[in-house]
Image (tube, each protein chain N blue to C red):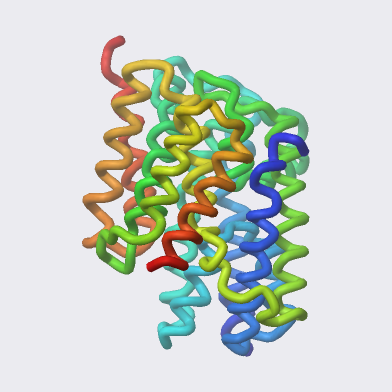
Length: 209
Length: 102
């Protein structure tokens, strides 16, 4: 719980804005809430509704969202050693993974702490689904979240967590390569692709120490 | 809107599968040493990419806007060894201020 404290309010407001946006798109009350409860990944959900908004078809909306979430496959690999037990339990606990819970649960050398991951994941889940519900029901009482600078809050969190990761030269090289690869690709690819391509930067780990 | 329910169902199922891929197939087993050397660099690579894209990313273009002062403010707060809550709040406040002034 405590680990998620800095980001829980942000996640709540972000959830509200997703609800407001989805409701304004005429996507109903229930469907946006169900999406937050089952997909539980902000950027992909926003991407899906923005594709629908710009008159893209459902295939385009689905591929944009799935592409954005493709990063969860390599992320889930790093979590695997920390989640034991029977298959249904591993399946369930792995759903606590989102960028923020995974980032705050890092304990060094690429490992995550299971309790931190699940605690932060549950807290963020409650905020995200609760926020979405408030958003579709309450409408635009809150206004545009960008007014509050919300779009800088998450990168600030990631920057703070990144700095704790830069203990070695190889980590620094991977960070620089990841950011560089992503930025170079932004003008030439659909959303999601730069982030996935950036994961290739961890291959610098294959170099001798 | 019936089409949106299809999106909800497919994206939901795909995301559940993606998030559970590692834990389901590997279980609690350790990764081989070579894989571990690669995987331990995933956090810095991905976090740096998220910061870069969320600050400078636009619609298929790179942009400099009110998010940049937010990132600078966050960096200063980190240099001053502020706790993470403060770093996040300072960044949001700087971006909100820059947007209000701009």
